[in-house]
Every structure is written in C-alpha cells, then in structure tokens.
Image (tube, rainbow, N blue to C red; front, side, top):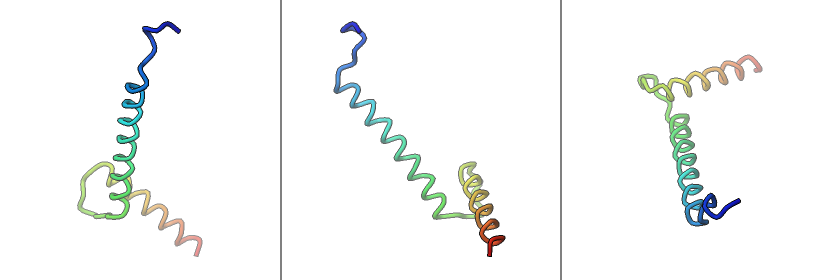
Amino acid sequence: MSDRTRLPKSLLSNKTHIFKNGVQSATNYVQNAIENVTESTQDATQNLVNNVMRKRQDEDNKMT
C-alpha cells in the first residue's frame, strides 16, 4: 500500500467516532420510540415500532 492511500490514524479514528455516534443516536431514537409508544404519532419509525410491539404482544397472548 502506498503512503498516499493510507489514512492518518487520527482521521480514521475520527471517522470511526462519527459512525459510532450515528449508531448510538439511532439506537437511542428507537429505544425512546419503543418506551414511549403513542397511537397518534404519524412518524414512520414509530409506526414500525408500534407494529412490532403489537405483534409481540399478540404472540405473548397466544402463548398464555
């Protein structure tokens, strides 16, 4: 590998840090959506979370 194609460690570390922050933000958003389920929200992610929660509740009810 030539020296021109290598990224400095600080740049690579910065890109990794940005990626991890993005993943953590997405995780927090979905976790909050799961914990704060509301029927009136028209947000697509919230609707997806609501549907998954209902499906799990239905499966749990069938098992009992």
